Length: 443
Image 1 (tube, rainbow, N blue to C red):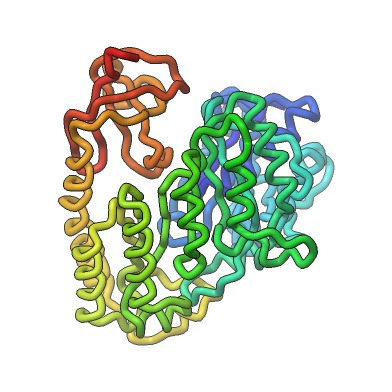
Image 2 (cartoon, rainbow, N blue to C red):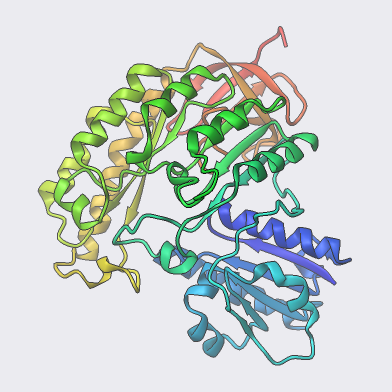
């Protein structure tokens, strides 16, 4: 069959799609980029927050239209939304032929080949973790890849549905992670982004031969051929001095700290079941900044949590003003079924939540521009991603501290270089999120 994939949500979901692609290709199917030519389409959904759920449903209904007079014979929905709302979706979305949960997608070949059965839902297991390093198709450009090290989450934040959907923490053995990294390097990958629900808890569940996040970082850093190793999703209380020191010491460990704080009011943090305090969060920021002044700090805040007062929201604003984070993301609280926060009273009105969100984002904009302006005049290594999305006359690349599809980019208006190469670029202009520069003549 000709099969097209649509992967929504986070990079962890994308890796699941890549595993499915690998299994299908090994079984003689074809993965196609044009949905109109596909005989089957797999929509790998996100069900984390309200906006993501809405996007997933809209995409499913949009794809279902391809059945009208086209090639599409089978519409398959996988991922978090399918797992979380299995009963409701099977009943209310007749347009979908098969639903596959987060613990069954590894059986995609058998499920697609099972054309005789009337079974529409596969949800027997909650979570699947690739322990053996099975073949997957890297859907990213040839020089970069995501590396998933675990599944599920050990934490129980009161607003988060991930443990309900994906289960508790399951870590891949260190040897298997290193093996996969070696395979990726052999295909030309030089930039790896390590992903999990919480990097700092890696290995906690491995009773035998337990290896933690620092050992994992050291093992990846030792591999020849990896120029950039970037981490996503570090729960703040797991960031140790040893980890910070290692990142400072190793050139290929990018000083990029993605630390979702969520809030800084001790009362709200407690209601969120976050195991940190405002004082501890301040200490973490100050330690990183003192040891690695050039480090990029990225964080997220959840606004409008039940009971959040104006004064407590102001605490967040003052914290952002004080520490001037390189990047700040904001999320508006939505009550997620099955979470403790969904049962909390004293809800913040939607209008107030939206106003607070915009206040936070407006506060961050000039800070982001100021941070970028500090790079003007510097010559920095930039990986070339290709022709700019904004203009065919510009090249587009990224600094090591710009995560793909998350952060800003470097627009290059002078000079040429091959895609995937890392070249010196002089930064000569700064915008709120992007930079503009020229490849140096010495290149």
